[in-house]
Image 1: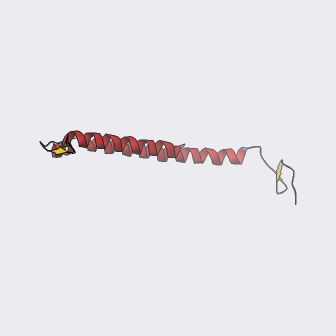
Image 2 (image 1 turned 120 degrees about the vertical axis):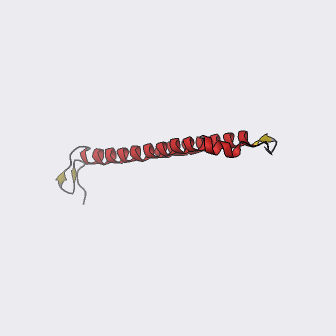
Image 3 (image 1 turned 90 degrees about the vertical axis):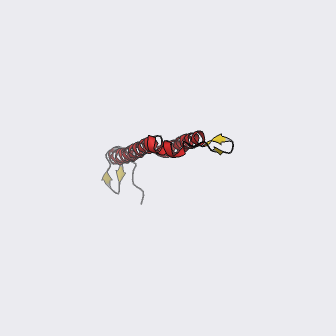
Length: 92
């Protein structure tokens, strides 16, 4: 059975109303989830770059020829950037 474009199953369709509302709800949910993940990343960064953890890695030792503290800071920084890219790219 073929219905005209303006009807859905014999019932007149409201132009774009149902689809737009569902799309808006999906966008709001995606925005909320992305916001929560970004806040979690901020808190993770705050934890990783806070004094107690920095003090653990503040040693006179070397890791692959780099001071342990510098290797830790660079690794955490790279990890946060990677996770941030993952969160932002997933949301779009």
